[in-house]
Every structure is written in C-alpha cells, then in structure tokens.
Amino acid sequence: MSHKRKVLHGSASNLLRVLLSMLVSLVVPPFLVHRLSTAEYSAWVLILQLSGYVSLLDLGLQTAVGKFIAEHDAVDDRATSSGVLSTSFTILSAGAIIGAGVIAILTWRVPQLFHQMPPALVGSVRVGLLTVGLSVAFALPFGAFSSAFLGLQEYLFPTVLATVSRVLSATGLVVLVLKHGSLVEFAVLMACFNVVTAAMQFLGWRKYLRERVDFSSAFFDRKTALRLVKYGSVLSIWSLASLLVSGLDIVIVGHYDYRNTGFYAVASAVTNFMLTVVGSIFGPVLPAVSSLQAVSTPRQIGDLLVRVTRYCTVLLCLFGSALLFAGYPLLSLWVGHNYAVRSAMFLEILVLANVVKQLTYPYSLVVVATGRQHLATIAAVSEALVNIVVSVLLVQRIGALGVAIGTLVGAFVILGMHLAVSMHYTQSTILIRRSRFALQALLRPLLSLTPSLLLYPFWRRFNMLPANPGLLAAWALLTLAIAWRIGLTAEDRQELINGASRLLYWRVQHT
Figure (tube, rainbow, N blue to C red):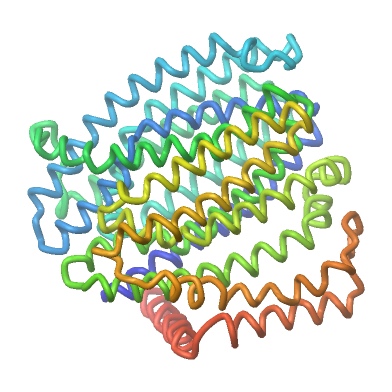
C-alpha cells in the first residue's frame, strides 16, 4: 500500500472511530446532566480530568514509539523495532508508578483543590479519583502496543478496540445512571474498562504484530532508552504545556468558580470533539512523514505541509463556523436549555480559540515527525505561560469566562510564535517560505469564513433558528462553494476526488 493510501486509510479508520465515539458521546452527557445535580456532574468531570493527568507521564514516548517503529519498519529492521517497543514499555511502567503516587497526592488534596465543592461530595470524589486514576496508571505502559500499531500504519485493530471499549463503557454508565448509581460506582465501571482495554492492547499485539515487532524484557536496551527519552523529553515539555493550556482549564474553573464547572465542561466537550475529529483525520501524517523523511527533500516535505495545512484550515473553518452559529441550538437539543444558555458563551470563545490554535496543527505533526520538535518548543511554552497567567488573572474577576479568554489569547500566541520563530529554525528539514505558508495554507482557505462574517449581524444567539432560513441556506451553500472552489486548489480538489475513489475501491475490495 502506498504512503498516500496508508495516510488515507488511517484517516478514514480514525474518522470512523471518532464518528462512532461521537454517537456514544451524544448519548451519555444528557443522562448525566439531567439525572445528576450540577454539583455532582461537576464532581464527575473533575474526577475524569484529574485522572487524565496520569497519561501525561508517557513523556512523549508513545509518539516516539510510533515514529521510530515507522522508520525502522520502512527498512525492515525488526530487531530495532522490537527494542523500541520493549524499552518503551519498561520506561512507561516507571511512569505508571509515579502516576499512582500523583493520584494519591491529588486524592489527599481534594478539599483544598476544590474548596467550593459541597462537603457531602468530597468522600465520593476521593474514592472515584483514586479508582479511576490508578486504572489509568495501570494502562499507561500498554499504550506502547497501540503505538506500535500506529507506527506500522495498521489502524483496524486499535480502531475497533477503542470503539468497542467506548460503546460498552458508555452503555454501562447509562445503565448505572438509570439505576441511580453513585459517583463511586461510575468510577469502578470506568476503571474496569481501562484495565480490560489495556490487556486487549497487549493481546492484539500478540495476535497481529508479533511477526513484525517482538516484545520481551530481554530486548531492553540502554541506548534505545536514551534515544527514546531524548526524543520524548522535548515532547514532554509540549505535554506539560498542553496541560497548562487545556488540561488545567476545568480544574481552574473548579477551584475559583465551582458552580460553573459543569457548564464549562459541556462547552469544552464540544470543542474537544472538534479537536478529536481534526486529530483523527490528520494524525496519520506523523508516521507517514516519518517513513518518507529518508527519501524526501526538505522542500518536498514543505510542499506536503502546505497542502495538508490547507486541507486542515478548510475543515476548521467549516467546523468552527457551524459550531459558532449553531452552538445554542445544538447544546439545547443535547443537554437542555439550562445548560445551553450557561455554556453557549464558553463554547463560542473556545471554538474560536481552538480554530486559531489548530491552524498550525499539521506543522506540529511534521515537526515531530522530522525530529525537530525542540526547535518549536518555545511556541508551546509561550502559549502555556500566557494562557495560565491570563486565565488565573481573569477567572478571579469575571469567573469561568476568563479561563476561556485565556485560551483564546494563548491560541494567537502559539500561531504567531510558530510563524515568526519556529518556522525560521526548522528550515533545514521543512523548507518553506513563511509568506507562502501564510497566503496559500492559511489565508486562502480562511476566505471561506466570508459568508459567516456577512451572517453575523443577523445572528440571534439564543434562538433555535439562529437566522432567517433563507439566509442560513445561502450562508451554508456559499461557505461550501468558497471552501471548495477558492479555499482549495484545482490540484487539491483532484487529489481529494482520487483519494475518495481509491478509498471506496479499497473498501469494496475488502468487504
């Protein structure tokens, strides 16, 4: 299978997983927000948020595993690939032990972290956090096996596993909600699925990948460990920066403005879905570029980056404009009028922030794939520092809205830093003129936002129909037309048509 077809297949598989997960995500929150009090729902959100911090202790190793296995598989170096997998599992196991300690500390400090939380919920939050957090720590090392699938560009098994796990866990959660289950019971259910999914990742490697990449404690190699840590250490800084940008926002709201935690979390869930879709479509670019790096020139990689960014920008414009104008109607249908009214403002700012930030998402992927992430770290760090400072300052004055504004300010910072600084230092591996990138990859597809700017004066924020039906129809058609005819080049359009034809043919041949 060619590289283009592998990327297309990976994007399609990831998108299928996201769409199925979306159906699950659409079902669960309404049950929770309507059957739990606002304080209980906020507590559950905080349990999941704090538990998720453990995954940051992968120190970028899971990304490194996918990259290095992709590179060594391209030259049929099975021994080195096996060493990468085995060594990363050992390092991640140490990270899991540290993660368990972090969860214990967070559990102990729950009353101090969330002093506005009703005292009756503190005990349940502590037990729930300990249960879910320890299960995430247990699952951490097994992510190396999933990364091996991605590095080998074999997407079917991890897609099926993630989808089945998500569907079953969500079904179990809905059943517990209907039976008036407690937060502790919710936590035990999620912990069980985390452990089972981790075990299935190992069994999947054993059944499908063992012939291509082996695993054993005997394959641990100190040089490989240093190589992984060196590569992942910079990514760990990116992960820490990501924590300060998106991982702490709900916690900051919970600490300073607990009553709005649930409402902010609903808005955040919608924007996270948008990010997940974008990530699922463009994520396969990383292993593909890693494989191509040895046979491609910096100029060719730069040309690839321009095209992929143009696709990404068009998608972000379509997704973002739809969420901005239809935010209240969608939220109202999803979680009801009360949550929709309180969450809509957060959603509007977070959507804008994440559209701005994700404009350089393909660039970040290519930078990581080419091993030059240390040259772009200053942008991630700058965004994180600005975001956390602005958020903490504003949340004390205007509440949760200040955290959303902090995210927006940080998004413009990382976009500007990548254009002004990062791209200058990565010219040796990603050769591209920044003026060309700005004009062809960003500004050209951003023209598809023109109809949205024209519609804005007629927008009715808290109406189920945000504008006259005729205006909405004209807006939608004009937006799609500009995105297709102007946002994309003729070569882009032909490539998308050919790619869709190849994918359809491949699906027909394998069904």
